[in-house]
Length: 292
Image (tube, rainbow, N blue to C red; front, side, top):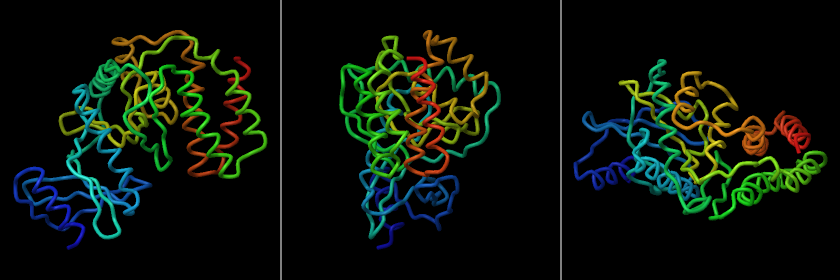
């Protein structure tokens, strides 16, 4: 059987309706997986594929999508199947025709993200490890946020950078920051359900202007870590931030913590893509150490 026959069989089993798809349509936008729209004229599904050994990545994504969807705060495509066919792994989820939003759409996105962040847990972390892009992301349950961020976020990425050959000044600054950054987290965050990788490429709007988020790296953490990433690469409107803050005001000191939280993503980009991200990470760490 071909991968598309296997996927069709999964969809038929999950929905209880026979699914005989037309030829898949390739979709762009991803740098890690291959993406497709699969339809039989009545049902349409979104499918991502990768190498067979990356099935666990898709399983974690499916669990993350469904946990976010279960929160019923903002629209998230629900995953219905993951599997392996031949030398490929795959994930199947709901398909949405996506477009750009208007001011009202962005206000809804801010309000609904605040509602998502109102979903809490007893500790920081998640039920399993997952990935941030193609990088492993450790989510061991931790009672203390400073410990979680030091051990499972910054410390992990710095260790990855060392394994990838990025030593010297980057590691020296990193060691100093890991010893001292606890003074920067000068508030008491509550574990909030996070998308985890929310940049402008992972949010769009359906045909009714309703926000849709996807490609998560789900965990429970400080909600400011999510907001910080929305600012890292831009693309979120002023309406979004005004609506979010109207529902969930931001604590004092966020400006500094924003840099601390975005350092994780810049280090991840260094580990994934190299280039100028090393210099950017060093400048961010120098700025944070000055604040300490």
